[in-house]
Image (tube, rainbow, N blue to C red; front, side):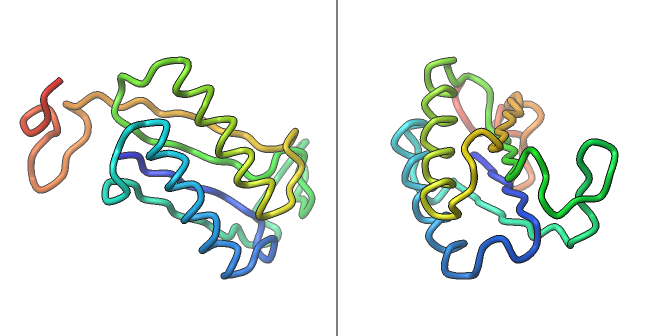
Length: 128
């Protein structure tokens, strides 16, 4: 069930690179989180130039870039999260040639009561 959102400044990567990132990150997440590819959603956002700020100013070359937000059901271990951070950072840097020191990954652990699909909370459809 992970939903992974990756923010890049517009023009940083092309359509082919986006496709590669989606494939690679999906594989990495599935190996580490032990899930099927069908439940992984990846959204790559192009943030328009002028809409990114760093150190109190608009910038096209931010200190931290790209920024990855991962929404997933709670229960992943610290080791799994560490492995996800490493794998996703490696995938991003290999494909987009970004500086690994600037990659930011933020986890949002969501309880099964707070995640719904098909009209039902996951707590009603998934065993804990």
